[in-house]
Length: 254
Image (cartoon, rainbow, N blue to C red):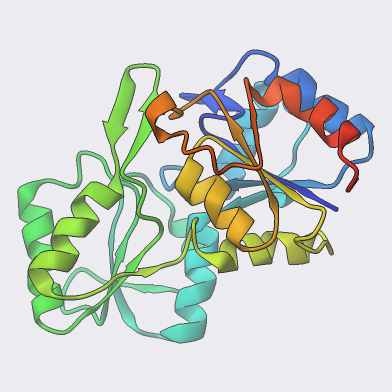
């Protein structure tokens, strides 16, 4: 079995450890539990995420982290080899898109990452033009919002819906809730969905998406969690990541 763990809103908030999260992850490590950290975060590279987490006290390495940009790079190389790709993203993730041909004009594929100041009218309208000219649309995720220490912030999904509707296209989603994200992480841990867990603060993208793949979903009441989004469909609901090690230990599947 394996434990897949979202980062933002579960382990950290604005990259600062949430109460009890460091100790809980250490307990999983001490118990010999295989785990992987899955994140739709597109503002940092895999290596920089690992560095920030280590500085915060988390017992992790780069190899423990699976990001939407890394999976997007694999997807583009497999499905659009050597295609001209235009990237709209907040943050420098070029290192995680090794082998992807990034251009500024006349793209064959528009790649949409995480939202930020770069998602202003001129750039969104430019992307709209590319899509009208026939470019494919690939999105690293379709999260509507995320939580920082300043509260909920709009994310890619809010803009992606408009682009899809206006251009009459449907985005190819690579990060969570895409099944490939969960499958890739489990394969790296040589684990199967049955008996494995997914821990997240997003009922749709983290928990229900993982449950649809056969994992046990655990919703934490931290991060972007809001009572009105708790549909009662999660296999488990806990106060925070600090409750997870005991839940795993008590599970008949472990």
